[in-house]
Length: 72
Image (cartoon, rainbow, N blue to C red; front, side, top):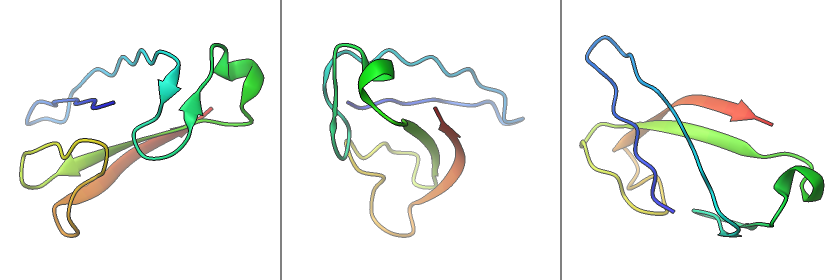
């Protein structure tokens, strides 16, 4: 999965995620009902200094900084 969130220069943005069952970006899989099947789920947002998303990985070292994270 490749998800991209763009924020304004003031840092305002909205995040909406829909993930169907299947492989996750880096590791693991989502089942039909992850709430019942998984202990926890982490969502992490990274700021890409180079302005590019790098697919299923955050990108080369020095091109991103983790900005927020949610654990469900």
